[in-house]
Length: 280
Length: 278
Image 1 (cartoon, rainbow over the protein chains, first blue to last red):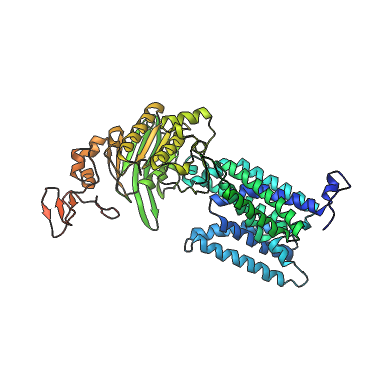
Image 2: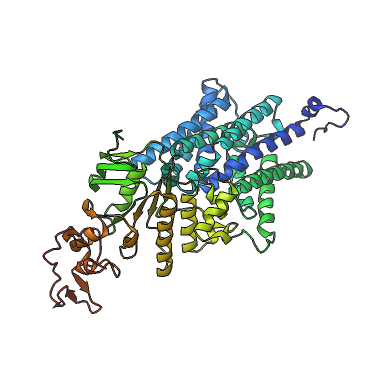
């Protein structure tokens, strides 16, 4: 394992340590995926998030094929899949569930086939599926924090209409909050998070970081805002714990973070709550 | 949505010849109605008669396939829908529910909850409320923004009889206090009628409308709800001109028993599709 900056001081020197960069990247992603993941849990969209994450493989493949930035490729394909899903749902012969299965696995398989058709490119399949948080560059950090601040900013700006639409689309529409528009923006935000998280977490771990911290936060929270905050904090705790564990036990870092998140969930599940307990 | 000048003072909503069609079938058609500030309008009709569809059209949730809906510019709406499918994973206190669609002060929240009689439940989780308490919380949420139009879709569902009376009293009191227009759906005429200014009797189309008295006296109303309802509003229940007795026989309005088949009386010329007998 590489040396942690001990002799030098200052922020730039800190960033020279791959482990520090990994910590910062994980913390940044957890801070965004907590609130976003809470909405996914509330709206029962876990499978939808999974499908969008799977489509990221196709996004990477197409980005390589057309020689564009993979972050842009993943974002574009994730948005496209969301729009396609909305269109197919409206046609209405197949359930949303079946459509998600169709799109999810097709996008994953198409991406893998496309990658194999490009012989001049050697791609790390494990990296696509599980990411590589220890290979985070300073540029990646800039993308994570820049993109993350934009996603959180838009989410904060649209918080009330988004939450109202989650409780009742009819109430939101009747009282002038345009839930269709906010739902669309939410999907774009989700696509944005998947795009910036793809390289670090990979397609299989992105949904885990969206769902597990949010479910861990549910029992302790009394309001939606607190649940979003607790989910972010729980995710950050999982990143710290997971990366420490991966260093200590020499285990793969991405899966270690998810295992740590599971640990956070287990702990919040057994914490005894007071009289006014919210675990209902 | 057409924008024409309102001919009646204080009119806040006008629906003209509205119809909604789904899968080639008209759910409701030819609806005309007008709601003024301070007026309580009640929609009644059997299940599947298009009450909720009509209300959603008024609110702009559903776009009519024919006809038009006019709403006063800047109309503030408070809506209590028939059903809310809120996932249990969403933590929500009653107080937080009050600010769902707009920002309100603590004092305004306390006032709305006190008005609906659930002031003591401010910090309770919404998922822990009883049916009646939840309805009151939804009504409090709808009135907190001081709406010009309060819309309630079967607000007394899941509430026992005394709670039902109390809720209708509450709705009347809100109207008296704030002067808002109220659009109310009821499948049950017996209590709400007393407070209602206008009743519209719906069964895929407007059967009849007017004051509770004129509607109760009208032949269409008797045909749809049975002669008993016309005689006395207070004990109204959805009834036809005959009743199904426990032993399977049918008793006509004249008290005669029919064992062979069940026939409808001469006034009962409406479409029976989509609703059962009480």
